[in-house]
Image 1 (tube, rainbow, N blue to C red):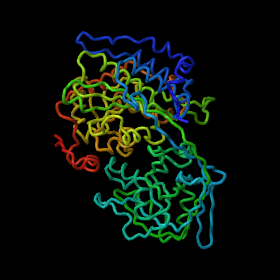
Image 2 (tube, rainbow, N blue to C red):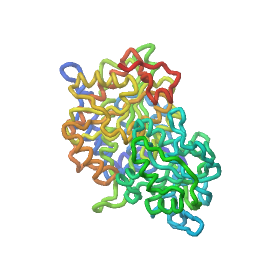
Image 3 (cartoon, rainbow, N blue to C red):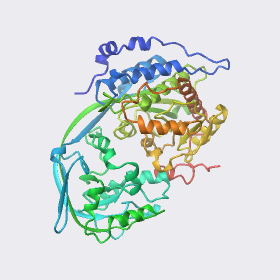
Image 4 (cartoon, rainbow, N blue to C red):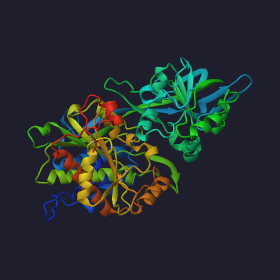
Amino acid sequence: MQLSYFSTLASLLGAAGLGLALATAGASAQTATGEPEFSPAAIKADVTFLADDLLEGRQPGTRGYDLAALYVTAKFTELGLTPAGEHGGWLQTVRLLEHRIDPAHSTVTLSGAQRADTWQHATHVVITANPLATQKVIEAPVVFAGFGIDAPQRGFNDYRGLDVRGKIVAVLIGTPKGTPSEMGAHLNANKAAMAQRHGAIGMIMLDTREMRALYPLKSRLENDTQPRTTWLDRNGRPVIAAPDIQATAALDETAANALFADAPRSLDSVLDQADRPNGRPKGFALPTRARIAWQSSTRTYDSANVLGLLPGTDPTLKQQTVMMMAHLDHVGRRSPKNGDDIVNGALDNAAGVAIMLDVARAMASSPAKPRRSILFLANTAEEPGLLGTYYFAAAPTVPLDGIVGVLNLDVPLVTYEFSDVIGFGADHSTLGANLTRVAGATGVTVTPDPAPAQGLFTRSDHYAMVQKGIPALFLIPGYASGGQQAWQTYLRQHYHQPSDDLSQPLNWQAAARFARINWLLLRDVANDAERPRWYRGSYFGETFAPDAAKAIKR
């Protein structure tokens, strides 16, 4: 039954103490120059509520997430925004399908002429299966296909000369060294669809040596064995990128060596070649059959995007919309650490939502309203795969062709006095020029992506909109002034851990500075005479908006 959020508003508000949290409502203060003031106290108050244990990690489909959605709804109402969800309300309901593998009845078997090895799910192998089948077995010969990339127009043709129809294809995770990182991240994310085009029925994923060193399967087990989730379209059908790929199995070193037993080329030699710059191991048939068997359970549930609109003032430009988003969900509960199993998500992404709310307050309270309309989106289900935003992109509540640019807030690391910012996507569109103007006015510098191999531009919510051809920018505090150490500490010790809570050294003044930068950036884009455009030659612009007018990068 679809959840009625407002029917339980009174009881939820009482349970959460929201009356006190919202009692701070009031007009925004102004500086002597007429610029809105950005409130460290207001951001702290929002993060304090959203990251409280009461919300139990804000996992979609839980009461804790619904409380968070109600909180943001109340804030949008307080600010005088216009409801921009479904049916004239604030919410857009997203139906989700969760698929959980049963480890006791799910196995991978690799067999050769005189050998057979079997492992249970979540030991040396991790199975990801098609949610349309809750009990199934696939068995077929295995063909190794290098990195498994089929993009001849980009110089990749790993399936050339290989027959994988009706077979299971084994591929290396990632892309050849030297591949432009953001293009590589997109290609890596679409390998299942590429295998499907060539007729494969299943996939086996193999770690490169770099992957083994950085993220060995053993360390990924807790995250990789979580239930997988997808979204349902308006007809109730699961949206699956490659529905003909029945199952995928990730192998650790032990299982990978068994896969290559008696092969014409050893796994070590393949990994040696993949370690070299632009190393591209060629594919070949393996003398191994793979059997992937699984049992699983599914459940469907609802969660909501929260949307508020600030209408523009220009008679023509108000038909265009600039979108600012921050995901409201987090991962809920995980294995206890020091007796604590609630993953509060203070920085990921309560802080992002709180900063977006402060930006919305500044925009709504300023006497000079923006020329373009602004859509604020607190979206659900980012953590299981950007699902809330993919749903919005497929069923937009405002005209999709009117959305001209997207600004995203995700894990704004406000634990130090930052002096630079990193704009993922700044090299791909004129949003980078907007950022340069704003940075110059605020005294911060814009630094390049310090970890291009991670492909971060493709790993947060704005990417669902990029795939609709819309320029986007993802801004975070940078690596200067102690930022690199702060990021390393957060990612190693707190990311997706119960310790991502208010016990961290959160710097609320830095949060307010970051809010101001985002406000200036949003205002600049909303008032710019020219709509954002992809740069000529941008991989994303050429791929997703090939017919759109392009700008020349200066």
